[in-house]
Length: 148
Ligand code: ZN
Image (tube, rainbow, N blue to C red; front, side, top):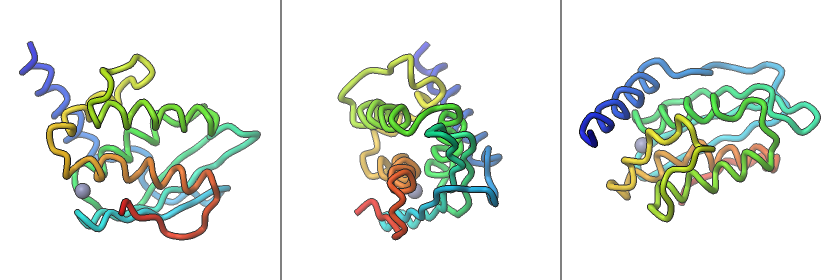
């Protein structure tokens, strides 16, 4: 069973890294930030359209490893319709999942497929890059962020 689940998770990650969702420009973006993970070389630009405190759209561009691309793809899917504070809470749960501090929570949904990253600590920054960039975008910090 556990092996089957791992295969399924792996399939979702491969699918999202090869065909990332919400990949491309977002001309009507209200917020944006750039992220860089020097450990792996992952780079991305995240753009958000926030209306009345709700993230209506999220898109990203850039180049990175399979984990960072899949994570950004899954994150942009998960964000839509949520407020900035809800997105921040989701990041908290996601980070706990990756660092093994908590088991999966129902709020995470499909983001759970990245739980396996906890076995590869050097890849955690690949999986969290998009989220750190999200935080920077929401705080409207117009400087590049790094996971270092
Ligand atoms: Zn990476």
